[in-house]
Image 1 (spheres, helix red, strand yellow):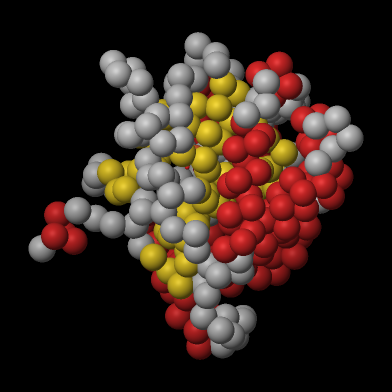
Image 2 (cartoon, helix red, strand yellow):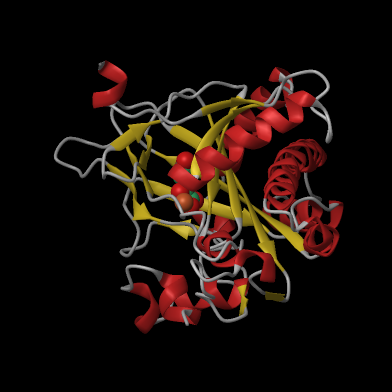
Length: 313
Ligand SMILES: O=C(O)CCC(=O)C(=O)O
Ligand SMILES: [Fe+2]
């Protein structure tokens, strides 16, 4: 009864040995992934490729990062909106601070970031962020491959993979003070293809179910929240919803989280195989960074569905 009254995020095990394309465990995991994505736009992946030491190193290095003076953190800038330092500004919740690394699965990406933050760089930070991003991008790639296979569009898989780029956002949410709002991050959908979220032990992330109930995520070092963004919704011709989520804080302990966001360089087109009488084409070809930029315009910000307003047919 309890589980009917309170829906929970589906949990899918990616730590099975032999989770390789073509095996039975791959096929059964594909089914679970498709069901979770089409139903919730989200699931929790149990993934053991990120060792506990790397998890601990990452979150302890984030403490050092966010302890840097504000004027240093503000040097993290980006051409893309919301991809550099965000925090201590009136348009974001007061508990929130975030910083970002573009091209996070490349050494240049992490080195560039660390040279901006620390004089002479920070080798430990670079190695940790790079290894983490690479390992988590492998989880993202497995999920993408499963989806392409399940929809019978494998022939587009390699070009999609080659056009994928990863953005890594690191976040700190401090606990609310007395009479301060407990909202860490307002309700939203992500604008990229897939987001993989991970965090320290302080809960706060909630994902909305189809029927409007909030599902709280219970953190653990081996679990990762995999979430569809609006670019994925567009690519799938609206078969996969983008998950609405938010962060609500309680207690005084800070919450550190990280997100690996996949974006596609160039134009995204709905594969022909996903268009039929029942599912006519719903989106014109679009650019995923263009979608992100549009969201941060006066016009795009207030829309219920950014992708529909941006390139809906
Ligand atoms: O901190 C989190 O877990 C969520 C962050 C988030 O939703 C985002 O950066 O888009
Ligand atoms: Fe998000």
